[in-house]
Length: 142
Image (cartoon, rainbow, N blue to C red; front, side):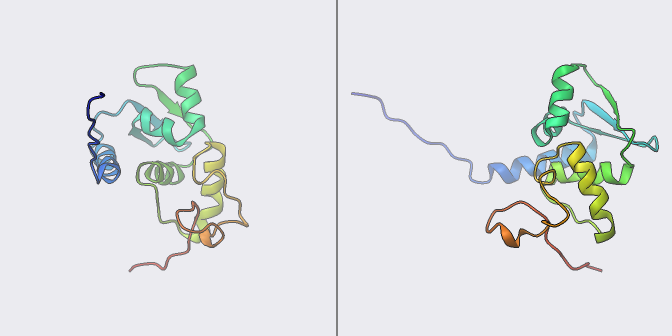
């Protein structure tokens, strides 16, 4: 007769991971990559998070392994870079309407999951149903 097995479950595991990743990013703890924008500004992040959210970064880091690479994104402005990194860490971000086209273009070039698939004509989650990825319009909270 086989032995019994137990399923051990951490109910808020995913939300805990998201929270910890955000805290690590804000504190720049355990970072292992520096991303530099076209203006020369930079931010530090984690290769594992970037690789999980972007096939561009995954291929780059696998093809060019280095301890702490500095990735210069010459055609990316810092505001877009910061917003996309925030999206990759938190799974959502609030963007002004006027910034959306440029952000989506950059997301497409960096192959950011959840945004790269979007087109200018398909930015509403109304078409997708529950759990769909995409952009929804939100009112400014001032």
